[in-house]
Image 1 (spheres, rainbow, N blue to C red):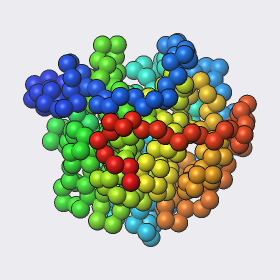
Image 2: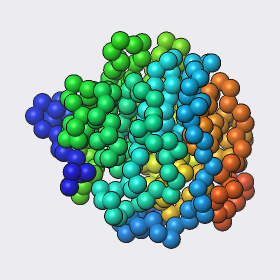
Image 3: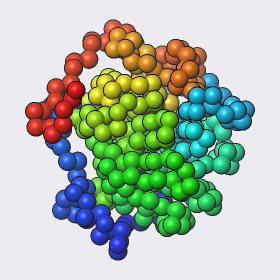
Length: 375
């Protein structure tokens, strides 16, 4: 099945094995899981529960969305603008350049067109209607971030890709020319040719794999996107990790922070943030305008589809977090973003839970062994 991708070999595999993150025959997270993040007593969802989204609480109808084409015709006055296109797919306009993160236009987050989590919300603009893209970022190889039909379409263009170690083998197998692929280890940097745009791969706390026997065969990363005037953080998928403090120490303040907030579960606390831990991650990063991603498109966990948004709306003001929550397809400049409103409520089934009554999240306790200061 072509959608499974291809394993790394040859010089690519040699470079992966030279990484300090490669241990034995796979990549590993380099720090222990922070205490209290994962509830070991909570039963993990079964494979059938994860793959079959039927019966999960999803919107009754399409969510409010905006066709972004008209907005994209006007340059961003501040030089930085983001358009959330669903899940973790964001078109970032930064000082005249366009960067597309984890592009997913496919109908399912699955190797099959017939089974697996199906999107309940369409992308607000066809892939072929996008303006010229200067760079595509792919954080890791999971199906809801690395989408076979989308990559096949982008392979027909001349756009370059920056991704994590090993993921280039999938891209090449699907038609992306090798000279258009740059694979980074954590803390490595790529510069977009002919432009003053830097992409830095940074740590995250996650895992990888597209088949039963390729667990952690490729690396997972977050990314810092940096121009002379702006700095943006994109989490990819991650659990809460003290390494976010190291990212802040190395890069300083961010104009825009995109963190995953959906598909969380008590037994997944070490590999996904969820809304409460996302707010703690934001604090470790030093704040900045916060655009939540990884929600509103697929039902990938047992919680209500809108729970991440409702929880953030309730908790963010208490912690002084500046939320940026545009409608799907709505271009927004973080410097001029309005206060968030619950635009999603009109199309969805209200959550059973009452996030406003949620207890205050406990402050993060970091192990003393972390090798970086927090202030």
